[in-house]
Image (cartoon, rainbow, N blue to C red; front, side):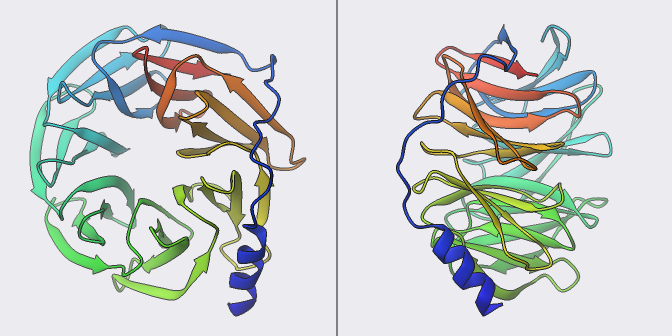
Length: 299
């Protein structure tokens, strides 16, 4: 384990912070939306987008982003996850997660979590909510919707993602931590990934982490082999693996960057808007954007 920490630490040395050259080969489709988009999740035929100041979630058609329904949920719905027909929406100011039926938009209920929740993931029969102010992760039983554990992480919590037998948590102290979903406890040694890690996605073969201050994307092998590290420049933030490609938003650069995992080829797309969250539908990458308020489909 110590070897992996040293390897990751050495990968995070500061490279030149230049953006990769824009790639004209990335198709972009733009769709104006109501409200100010924040969180987004996507499926084969639909996507769901929250409106932060409006406190709503809307279901949109994936073909043309036409609105199907819109439901009032809470103030500051900043993050969202989807599983088994239910949307779990983080209500940051209310310190709760709301449940919404993805087909009808019916509000199913609310569950109290920690203070200032900022992210959510679903896995191992539970919903895991990252609470920024508390430096905790709340575990909520997916079936009963009852909170049944609070896990403290002294390094802090920023984003969470479930996969590879663990819940992975980026921290405020340059590390990636793991929670054992069976015991509800932090396990192993925190993995140093570089300054200001933010997004994390454990849905693919590797656990991908964006490292804002070093302009890098790191792929951590769950078996703790040497990590893959790619310098993309700028300030990569939210992250999503889409098949053979990893995508990250860069709000400061108003762009999205992509990395082909096998070749290491880096491309970027200037999107003319400020990206918020990013999602993979299985066939396309979707980005919630502001200034202007719209959703963008890549690929």
